[in-house]
Length: 148
Image (cartoon, rainbow, N blue to C red; front, side, top):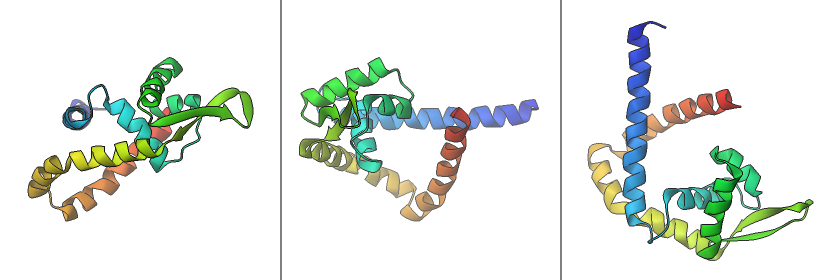
């Protein structure tokens, strides 16, 4: 790979990283005290994908150590957002289930960033975002496949 190509790709991933940091900070500023983006992300994942997953499956999905996921799930459990139940398929493991409070937490968090979204929409109308999202999803899928 030549230097121009390397610089282009580095610049792209640098911008993506900065966007991730800025969006994380904006969301975390609006979450209830003591809750972080990982808490929101796990709840969001359980709603988007499905609940009833094992902590190990969640750790793998988020590419974090199981101990890190256990800590995150502990915070969610303490806040009443998830319940940890025995795994009916494997008595040695547990499964993670959303509660109604967890679903409300997600909806409240999403609603809390409405002011930020309105500012964003003033520069990037919905049509433009609809054009960008499929490209980002394709890049994510490529990177996700490469890690497996």
